[in-house]
Image 1 (cartoon, rainbow, N blue to C red):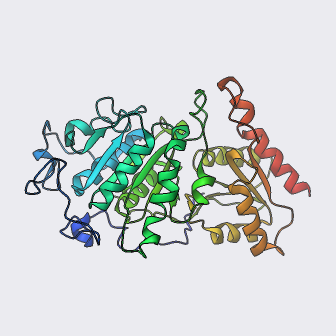
Image 2: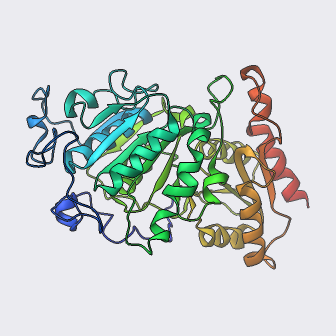
Image 3: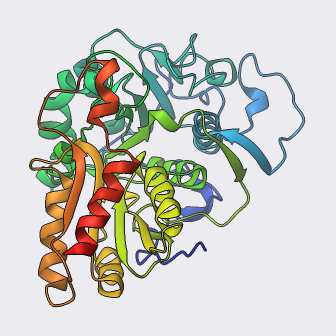
Length: 394
């Protein structure tokens, strides 16, 4: 049984997919305070960007194609690609930047075909210089653009950390809200693909700990499509963590469906004995754990956080009041991780409802291991069910 009980509504003016003109967003003529109207890089300000909202058929190299059906079966990577394409068609200020996002279409092919449709002034291959990439995105945002940056792998984010936490996160607050920085950093994150060092990091706790950043991570196709749409329309900087091990999962996507909120947790599967909380790549594991537990007569409720900052603690607490037990599952090491924050927050709210201590299942306090050992490092079905057993036996 699938239930949606998100407690957070979409941000004002962000839920509709009707495009910026319908929402009074910049792009319909307005610009962020303190900025000037965006001009095409190198242009004189009189010509429209390639691939603007005037129609994709105006873009260089665009070939007329029959409209795609509203409901299609897509991989998660292709779903994100479709979300980017829609955002770029609806708002000429949306530009893509990153290493190999143009000709190659991204290391995971998430930006495949966008250079051909929108041209090199809106899909820009960058040098291998993450700090420079994010710094340039900040500058573009100050000039009225809406940059979407792809960091090729999670571990490559660290060279850009100062730009992210010292400038991107703080400049809007430092200016008392006069400066908007609508920058989205797309980061393929976490492990599970047998990659090498620096390619399987889980960075969410760093960013969630930094005020001024929204940190989102979708676990299904609809969330990936709609949350990214709203992240791009948001005037706040957003870290969009994409679970790379799910890039090749396929599911139906309805691009005409009601948009989902950008933030707020969701009860994915109801249960009565114990709550499992997860986000991103671990939601699927928790659903598999709930199915396995059901065969033994145990009823587990699964909550997908969707957003780790802001954190929808109330939806988690409401679930714990029903089940009396909580196990938090994430890939990052548990030491000073997001699970510790959730355990503390839920304990404050549900002390008299808890039948057992909040338990955590995550990575160990060690650097991410070589590929041949990641199966030992990452949470798996046995570790999740073992934690459930311990919670129920308490």
